[in-house]
Image 1 (spheres, rainbow, N blue to C red):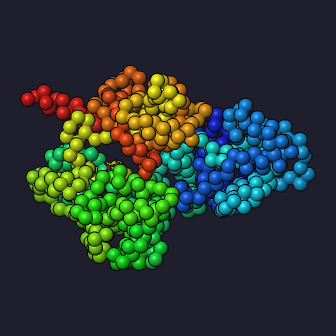
Image 2 (image 1 turned 120 degrees about the vertical axis):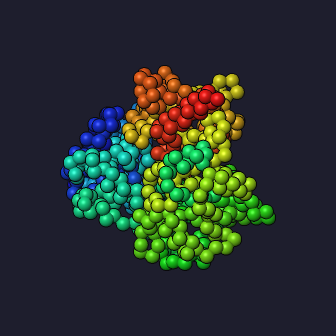
Image 3 (image 1 turned 60 degrees about the vertical axis):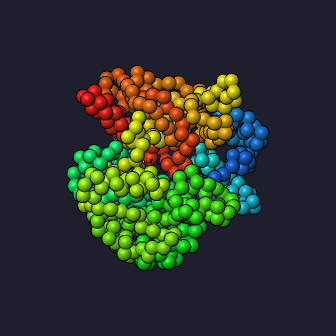
Length: 588
Ligand code: ATP
């Protein structure tokens, strides 16, 4: 299949910001794609070669790409750089240069999707200094045969600049329409995706075997499962109203969620956003094998920093010292941890996802030999509200954030935030209660002491229904000089010339970013807002919701993707429960 079909689709998509149109372009492409290569198309559309958790990066430096373009067109590198500076986008610059191409190629080969994909894969596999020349050769051979529009998107993909604003869920919608005729079957596709986190695999499965086959989609080791999430509650009574069934309480530790996949001696660890984090935890890899009584297993645990002398749990920030590229062995020594297992999703060929919590907990307990490093999360079956209060007290005294309350009969609902799991923290009882994790979508230049950096950031929630990023506040407090520098550095990589179509903002920022960085915010209140777009028209016509007195807590949530940020629905729930508190207080 010709790569020009993918390039044309990407071209149309760049020209629209409407989600329906974006989806329709994808539908048209999927319909004409042979099932054997549909997984490759699904990855390429997102500028990837494999699912994110496999960590395969094309990562070609712009300098190399410019040399390659120069080699295949005969246009001097300096002229290409000049063009790039003029148009501000490497893809467009490449297309312009290819238009003016002076060298003619006699033996032009057709560019197929397979050829582009395989060449990019070879480039991604090349490592080390000596690889630069090979990379350049591969790229120039592609560009040699590329039309301007093909060149434009090849250039964007190799330099990791393909920013179309299509999220996984838009692709699932398109697959559902293309292969089942309607969006109604999306939940089945979504289920398969939640179980394997691999869009290419889901696309291939539905294209080859049809929607019915997805019912039997299997969990497999080394395909991370999208984690089950919890709703917030402020006390035992609210928990009881929400769960409406028997439940257990577990300690809620303040560490990093780790999904452990093990098959014989091989262990891979995935973060909450399913990034491969095995390198940060060599101690888990070394020690847990002997605690696990199975050949093949998928488990979930919270890794928590501890004080080895007192056994006390330490806060999340301590653990973040592990997130470094070098000197990991030193960090392992300085920041010791324990691993606290709280769920099991697969064991020796059998999926546990559809089993009840009670059953999973029984299997979990019988699959782990506890020691001082690997433990099973403390748990208590709850009969009365007082027991929740007592257990919460114990948890807080041991350094926990609070409790997780889990309905005894509930299955593991991959990728869902549902009322079968609730989180109860002490701080939910005051002010707005919980913090929010928001996405940085824009920034405003600073003045005075903040000149040369950003003075305030524009933040959004995540709207799961539209796959959008509606603005919810502008935040300028809570930053130290160090964090302002850090933001300037991190965010400079995310600047986009054209606002991402998924961003919906009532304020015009000085700079727009690719919605990627998630930070933690506390606020005093959620109010109706004529400016911000979160939950627009949902509470009152013409108004959205916004945060009052937002403040950065100092936590950048590296382990969260923008889709994991606080959702619009959660903000609506927080707004309503805050209203309820005010009303309740008025009654007395
Ligand atoms: P999210 O709910 O989206 O994960 P968050 O990280 O802000 O957002 P938290 O309020 O920290 O949510 O609560 C959920 C997290 O609590 C889990 O992702 C997990 O890392 C952690 N956790 C700690 N103990 C447990 C437990 N016993 N069961 C489940 N999760 C736990």
